[in-house]
Image (cartoon, one colour):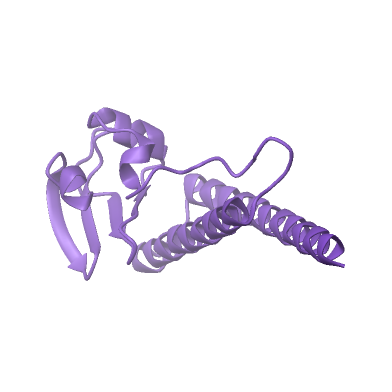
Length: 159
């Protein structure tokens, strides 16, 4: 997964275990502004400090967003309700979203500390991260409520 991405980028340099910086392919980059990370489960996380959208980045190198994930994301909805596996997948995806947004926020704050400045694009992206964290919390809450309904339904069928 990560090799497929890295081989299509310019100016790639390793910044630590599972972390790289490269020139962003979605805009004219004089110095590397694209942060790339790989999670333990093989997902690839990208963030452009120049403000480029992740979809624009992967499109510029001939990939899709699904290429950043080791397995396809499945729908959590089932006709007639939720099933246990779908609930687990939805909850895991919410946690992955939280992990990604925390990483993005950390990278932005690290850049701010390094440069001693904060620009409007960084503030906007941090606000977007806050919105995505709120959405992930909402998904997790819906999963928990649906799981309780499934458990209740199972208990009522047994008695």
